[in-house]
Image (cartoon, rainbow, N blue to C red):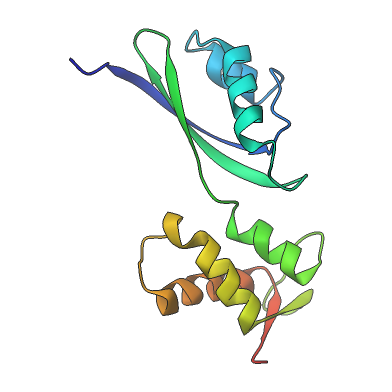
Length: 143
């Protein structure tokens, strides 16, 4: 018989640096999950990722206080900021441009994000990433 799912928790954590402090502790503590068990498992799975990488994680909590988690690809905005070598996006993306990315970089990011996007077509995935880039105030170079 399958276990009963009592909650699903979505968090964005830095790879290899999860700790029982917020946001992990309060999110899992309210469901009586062993927080240190999650922290150790998450840090172990993400220890080979580049330092400072933000990764979304979906934690499924069962009625017997056990859990499973799935690590997703980093957010498109994080990958775009890294590619454009900027700290943050524009507060007025339609007026102030803060950086530039090439179509080659857009394609690389689309390939990385492909498994988490709702398309299997690379061209459509590139359009999704371009939309995110424009909303961050990034220029798209056709190089």
